[in-house]
Image 1 (spheres, rainbow, N blue to C red):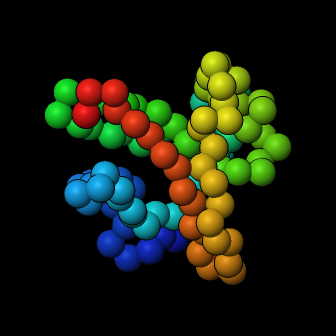
Image 2 (cartoon, one colour):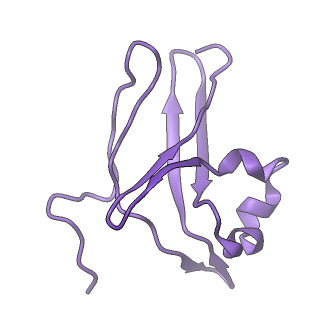
Length: 104
């Protein structure tokens, strides 16, 4: 059985600040088997505005297995699915990613 942080539910919800920014803490994901393929580590993300909603997956920067992931390969511009590393320490990885909902 895998150990996780106490209180970790596997999902969460957060409201954005007035400027639209948001932050959350999670565990660094691992890859997994899906059908007959191996998925690269990624985060599932849903952003809901007043009118628009974005559902996507963010992939970890610098992972060679991203290129073999079928959802990563299906993206028109997969670079948009990779957040920027802002800090990479022994026990903390800080990523930044920007999304814009056209109508909010």
